[in-house]
Length: 154
Image (cartoon, rainbow, N blue to C red):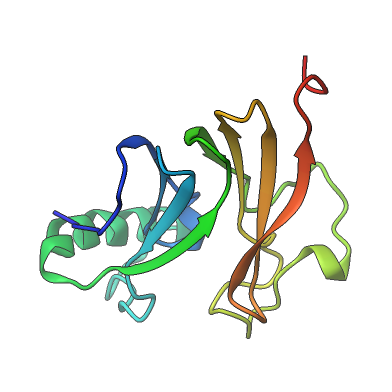
């Protein structure tokens, strides 16, 4: 159980793509998005001969089993006036898109593997707007990367 000092109701919860580790994004009725993460210093599954994805999934299952004893970190940012009703994580990477250096996170930054796109969360809120937030690994802050004004997303 993770307890937070949120002032409003929790309207949606989504897991991040597995490449980012164990993270949850929480949409709140007070207009905030809360991102909960377990520390990334968890060891890999020892002696595993599984492919990387299977190894990480096995590790995630083990982390979930131990999550109540761990300390979650919290990141919060304001997304919408009147509440966040929906959210979705962006993909970690795509084999269909060409990647430019500014669109990927270097392996040394934030512990993410080279070639991963920065974390992104799309949100929809009571203000009739859809917004895309991008996490900046250098400043460790979430920024409004793009938003569709009310009426633009019909």
